[in-house]
Length: 452
Image (cartoon, rainbow, N blue to C red; front, side, top):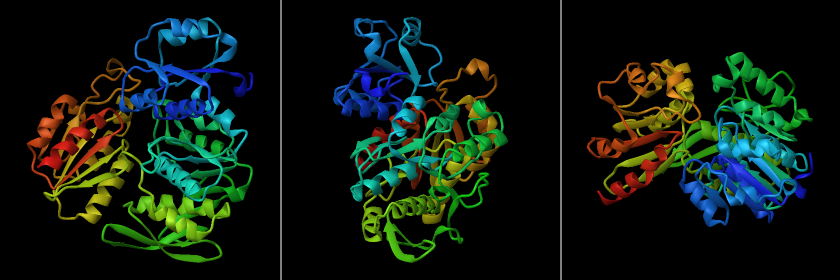
């Protein structure tokens, strides 16, 4: 295919996805004409339109599409979209049509790519690596799977020597990348609709690890077998790079960081959870190997604000606490709830959870039941289907999942009824959690709690 630089127009089919929108912002920042389609108008698509990107929400072949010149236009699509008239048109008229992952891979070929993979932790880790790069003023661009609270975007351009990318295992997308540095945070079973079983997803991560040319530039959480030499990182146990002496003081986390050569004491930040210190550990390991001094890294860690919808916490005058999180796998829910129980052991917790995908709900139903049982009360929303159809998953419903939750106070609710139900509940901490459109509850909840 032609070089990306030769295209003047980029049409994104599914532009509102978190990974797609980062690419759209990249080409828009490069001075190209960017336009696209998405099924739903969201906060993210609104931001893209405010930035000057043209988006439609109807599956129609309009004049903007028919006027595109084939030789000057690249079509980028997400595999989450299975059937669409617009995509059929581009294929039938023989435009160049590529998956998002392939295009991101082409971009990384010409940079020193830092790729962060893992079924959990990759968004926080890649965002933190990007933040540290920015604070150290390294020449980099980043493509993230979440919105950084520091730079209010999932994309940032500060140069082209390095690229920081979230390496997505879905549809084996990460095998399109050209990583010079890589992190593997976890290889738990997920996306079984793609991989089938745990052994196959672990093999996918081994194939990803094999793409890294240098053993000393592959960082893997200690305990994960990846099939080749690598460096390890950990928390509260010795590894090539590790953190320990964790303590909390006035909502801040302190920890010490160890390299093979030295110990740097008293890093401090606001991001709770042992799993997040683990993410910080590998980010510090990479940046120190890129030559950034620890004084700069300490300051950068201290002013890291996190990622939108990753343990986003608000404390109100009435004493109530509201936490919003993107977790959609039992391991992730356990990590969030465990952090809440560690820091607020005597608080009454209300969880509002929206399952994401019928297949994931089916595959991990017992684990979801166990992780959701560690609250005082649960509102379980209807399953968010995303790319799936209920008719293909007979009997897999939120009512079915609720039976597996061991709580006295539990109920199923439609999303549009949930806010009114929340207002009637007695709680100290409210946790909204899930990866679908549960985020539409966020603004109404914040507004309500700030007035009460």
